Image (cartoon, rainbow, N blue to C red; front, side):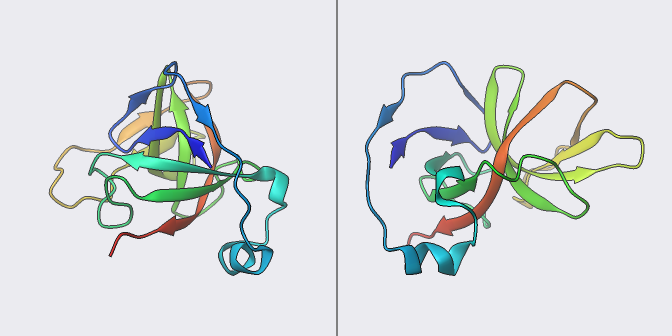
Length: 131
């Protein structure tokens, strides 16, 4: 488990991070993803811009092996400048990427990143929901 927070609105990536090793049953992780275990890490979402997909404080499983934005409409952990965030990314035909929030109450238009502005850390492949 890593005490690493990705803001769903944005957080600075230069904050100290506490790393705690935890073991999880392989079968349980396989229910979420078939990714190689060495590519996986846990982080915590912070903020409400990705609600209801990911709520504030929920834990996300990120696959670093999926760092290319593919066709479709998937959720990624990323760095945009010095800001770390979790957002829905949509590749566009011109090579740029739209950055979307899932929260329907946020009325901002999607941001757009062009070549070199965006660094994808990995795809969010699981969310531990609060109930």
